[in-house]
Image (cartoon, rainbow over all chains, first blue to last red; front, side):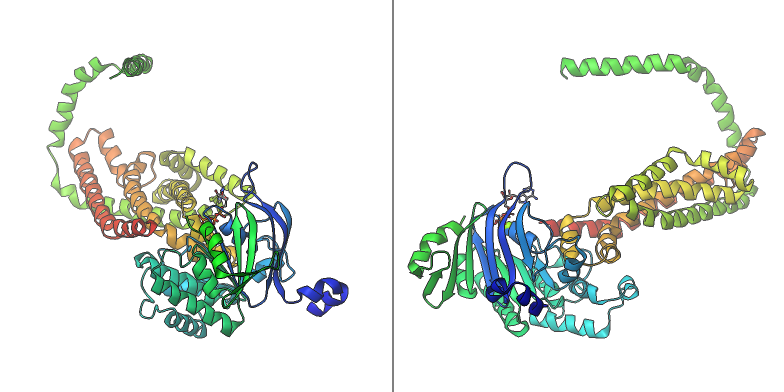
Length: 276
Length: 261
Ligand SMILES: Nc1ncnc2c1ncn2[C@@H]1O[C@H](COP(=O)(O)OP(=O)(O)OP(=O)(O)O)[C@@H](O)[C@H]1O
Ligand SMILES: [Mg+2]
C-alpha cells in the first residue's frame, strides 16, 4: 500500500511515508456564522506523542472530532493513514476500530458495569451473535482484566459506571480505548481535572502503552507544562488557528513554524494562552 | 391575580357553561337523580357473598388477559421504538413508523375490542388482542421518547469505535433506557387491568362481562361484588407497583443523577 503511494507520488511520499495524520488548510464550523477552526495545517509522524494546547473555546476538541470522523471539514483535506475520516465512509469506519477516542465528557455507559464498558472497546472483534448475547471470548475478558490492573481498576469489575469517582471514570475511558488495541489515541483533556499525582500517573501509563504499542497519541491539554513534559510536539491553538508548533527535547524548544530555537523561558510567554 | 388572569378564568368558565348547554349537561338533573343513586346503593348493600368465588375467578381471568396483553404488546413495541427513535434512524425510517404508532393510538382499547370481536368472535381472545394493540401504541411512544433523551455522550463515544447499530442498541440504548422501561411496563400493566375490566362491555371477556350483565338485569347486589373485587385488585396492584418502583427505579435514577454531576 505504502509502496504504491511512493511510486505514484514520490515527492509526496519522501517526506510523508511516516505521516499518520495530515491536515491541509482545514476549516470547519458548527453554524454558518463563525468558524471553529480556520486553516489548520498539521502533519503528525507515526509514534509521536502530540499535544494540543490552547484556551477554552480555541477549537481543541473540534480538532479531535475531525480526526475521528465525527465531524467533517467545510474546507480543506484530512488524511488518516491516507483515508479521509468520515463516519459514513466504509473504509474509515473500519479504521475507527483502532482509533481510541476519549472525549472530554468521557462518554461512559452509566448503567452497565466497569468491565462491560471496557469490553465495548473489543466489540469490533466480536461476531453478531457473541455481541448480542454479551458473550465475550475468554481471551477478551482476560485482556480487559489485564488492562484494568494496568490502569488501577482491579476489583472494580462489577461496579456500575455511575458509582465511580471522577478519576476512576477517566481510567475506565482510557481502558476502553486501550481495549481497542489502538494505533491512534485521541484524548481530550483527560487529566485536566485531576490532582498532579494522579495526572502524572495516567500520563505515564499512556506513555508506557505508547512505547509498547507504537501508538500515535494526540492529547489535548490545558496545562502547557504537562504537555511539554510528555509530548514530542506541542501545537498551540488560538481562536481556531495554530499559532505555534514546537518540538521539545530537554531544555531546547524548536519552533517548527519559524525554525527558531527557543528556550523554555520564551515558552512562558505562550503558556499564558493555555491558562484560563 | 392580575386582571389578565381574571379574564382568562372568565373565558374558561363561560366556555364550560356554553359547552354544558350544548351537550345537555344539566346540574339540576344530577340533583334530581340522587334518589336513584340511593336506590342503587341500597340494593348494592344486599351483596350476595356466594358470588365471591366467581368474581375472584373472573378477576383472575382479567388479570391474566392484561398480563398477556402487556407482555406481548411490550415485546412488539420495543423493536418498533428502536425504529421510531430519531437519534438512531434516518427520517425515512422513523417517520413512517411514528405515523403507524400514532394511528394505533388514536383508537381507545374498547374500539380495538369491538374490531377484534368482529374479527375473531366474542370472548377473551378479542380482549387480549385489544390490549396488545393499545400497549404497542403507548409503550412504543414512551420508549422512543426515552431513547431520544439518552445522553448523546456515550452514544457518540461508542459510535466513534465504529460499532454496528445493533451493538450500539445492545450496549448503550437498552441499558440507558431500561429503568424507564420497567416503570412504563408497571404503569401499563396497572392501566391494562383497569381497561380489561371494562372490555366485557363489548363482549371481549373479563370481569366487565359479568358486571354489565348484572346491571342490565338490575341485579345490583351481584354487580357490587364484582365491582368491589375490581376495586380491591386495582388498589392492590397500584400498591405493589409503587413498592417495585421505589425499590428499583428510584434507586437507579438516583444513580443517574449522581453521574451527571
Ligand atoms: N456542539 C457545538 N455547537 C456549536 N458550537 C460549538 C459546539 N461545540 C463547540 N462549539 C464552538 O466551537 C468553538 C470551539 O470549541 P471546542 O469545543 O473545540 O473548544 P475547546 O478548545 O475544546 O475548548 P475547551 O478547552 O473549553 O474544551 C467554540 O467557540 C465553541 O463555542
Ligand atoms: Mg474541549
